[in-house]
Length: 576
Image 1 (cartoon, helix red, strand yellow):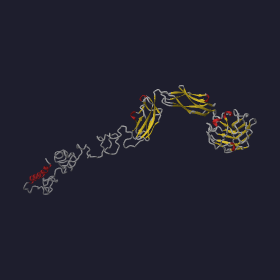
Image 2 (cartoon, rainbow, N blue to C red):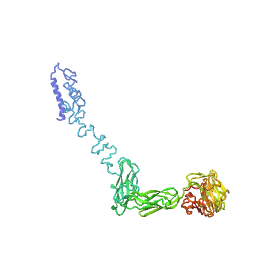
Image 3 (cartoon, rainbow, N blue to C red):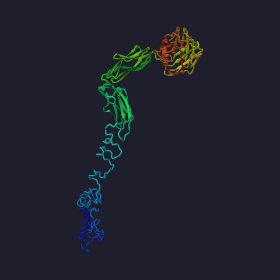
Image 4 (cartoon, rainbow, N blue to C red):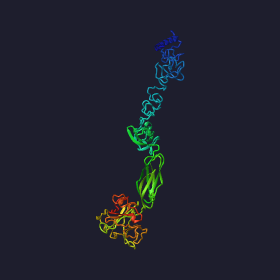
């Protein structure tokens, strides 16, 4: 019935009940309802005959007022275990539990509340309206399971996000921006008809920082002869680089066998070239390095032989020395498939000399020049001396050289002179002063009293013998030795360190005497190596600054005649 009619019905019911209970003429022995006194048969009397105020006009409590009788036992009503749906309460027209209330647990009173369980609420039990709770699984969220509704967290994986699994050339929203570092090396190779990494080194794209999520780098090619699948290279999360897989096909662009690849990430680009080889392209010799070597006896030196392109199969190269006395090399060296070069060692022999090392492949060859010193000198030597000079017969000096890697203290050592034909021993001896130390690969200069700066002598002496030693300008002997060396010690004595016999009549040289005499302004100088010549040893020559370590114990083979003297002292630079 209409709500207004229900309101009118309540007072009528109260009036009829009052008239029925009390009558028109109350009996004094009967209880009077409404007099404010609870009498026999009454359970309440509030002094009036109003209904709905807790005590009805029947002097009984108003139904559903929280008494615990006839109700769910709660003041609010609706939905308790005792009540809900009984005849007395929930489910009746008067109480909660009706279609309008839907079991909210609030007092009914005829007002429809938003409540859980209705078709509009989706079962949360709370008012919805933008609660901010995880929605997880709704059509709007895309199934992320993470708080949505504007939380500001990365959604990663929704249809709306840039990180849905499709390449997005960079990072996902909310992550650290990455940048391109390098793309290379350039000049690598790929073989037609294949897909994979380039060789002899793999083409790689690199970032400046580790990728916080997968990063896709675009790679474009200038020619279809080289391509990258999808034009993209993926760098995995946590990685900084990735190898570029290329597909090579010479038939795709008959006009060229090379392509320039361009890597792009954001606004940054890098380029590298890739050359495509035929399946069985023939490789040829390109270089043999170093092109020139000079080594001492027994010393080893590494060589590298290189091809013009990487071969499809392992390629064997023949090696040989000319003459064979120069030393030893392996008979062959192999360049592995898809590589450009191979390394091997050459070991010098003991006889010394010069020649070449030859590498051969399919009838073609390349060579490197080889110079071998007969011995590896491990002691102080007489490196340059003059028995006369522009300043006269007494314009003399003896230069010493230390070819070792350690300083040598020559304090107390002797420099001795003997005439060309004398047989009874050396004639004179000069003792080097204290603190005479020769640095590693350094020099020391002893001079005569007639050593004249006006003679073209460029440096001062470290010690002077005055007039103690008087060399013959045409022929004689000069030697150095330890402090204990006596004038009559033979050349074979262990106290003798180095001896030189010069001139046509010198009778006790090491090996063969130096037969000729230098010009007046010149000198005798020890070679840097077995292959040294006058031209290589003088100023501007290839051996000028390579020291004076060659000592085969044959004076004629060990020395050249300089046209102009060039003494060096302890302050001169070390060589080589």
